[in-house]
Structures are given as structure tokens and as C-alpha cells.
Length: 164
Image (cartoon, rainbow, N blue to C red; front, side):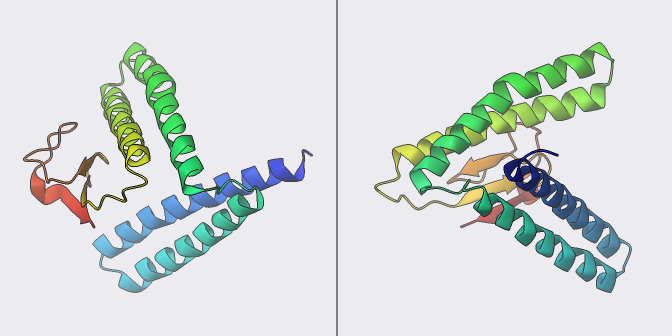
């Protein structure tokens, strides 16, 4: 067995995966007209998020906002440049067009996340207020204005969710 920090990281990853999976299960249950089951999945997903957050805090992964922005920028840039690039090449080599599209759109979205973090770091002191618009199809985030279409996947404006 590894260290306590290894166990905390493993717990965080497991809880984060469970929370996402349960949120999707809740959406499916709601689509099937089972609101109580959807509610059960949602509340347990939230519980799993609490477990994961406690593990991250025990690892001292949450730092100052400035440090968190810098870490998030570096992470997004790395994922976009390296991981998703490799994923796209793998999917293309295997002829899996659906996976290649998913990976290339995710890479493009990760690049926009990095830009948003960089912008936030530049404006940290002035605390600029903005509304973000999240594409519910691919995850693209628009800063300040609702686009006529998602620049990554082409989704229409009604597929965006405002965050203010």
C-alpha cells in the first residue's frame, strides 16, 4: 500500500468519478419519468462531491485564488496540448470518428478554459464581473456574450446555459 497522500488522491478520483456518473444517472432517471430515483442519484452525487472535496482539502490542494488560477491554467494548457492531442491521434489511427470528434472538441474547449483562466489572472485585482455562457453540448464557455453558435460544436444559442 502507498502513502496516505496516495490514498487521498485515489479517494478523490473515485469520488469525483462517482459524482459525475451519478449526475448522469439522475438525468437518465428524470428522462424516464422517475423523479424520486433522479433525486436519489443527485443527493448521493452531492455526497460523493463532499467526500472528494474533503480529500482535496486534506491534500492541501486548495490554495489562494491566485495560486488556484495559475494551477488551473497550467493544467488546462497541458491537457489541451498533450493529452487530448494524443487521444485524437489514437482515435484517428483506430478509425473511431466519434471518439476523434469528442477528443478534438474537448481539446478545443480545454484551450478556451486556459484562456479564461489567464484572463482571470490578468483581471484578478480589478474583479471584473461577467456572465459566462456554457454550451451544454461540448462544454465551451463564452465570456460576456452569448454566441450566435458555439465556435467548437456549432450548437445554437438555446443550447447555452448562463452563469452570472
